[in-house]
Image (cartoon, rainbow, N blue to C red; front, side):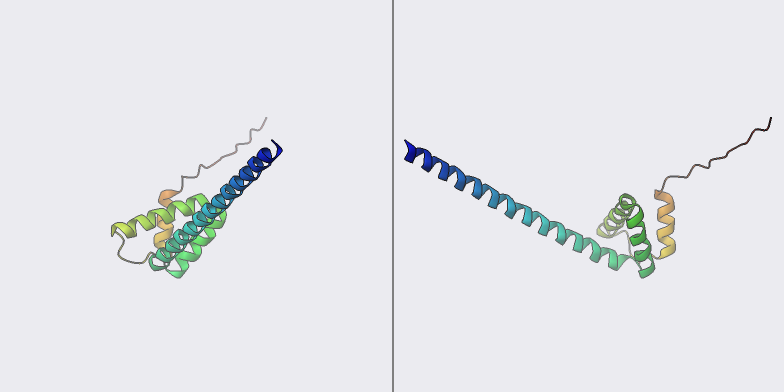
Length: 114
């Protein structure tokens, strides 16, 4: 009885170890795929953006990563669809940003005098 229990424990321990190894391999594979995807995105953006536009996009990425990712996705889609033929310079990127960013509301404070 004790031998059977010990064998079951060893078998279960081996199964758990195999599952952990498989999970680690899967995680490693997913990380590698993500790195490759990131490198492809960077390569596309390097070919599409001028140096100053890339610098601006980098600063935006620090301040507002969701907006920078949105812009990157749009630029990549334009390149892949063949609708973007020339490099985007800083002024064109500013125009794109103005179209994407929500309009700022102006706040006026009025002081009432008694």
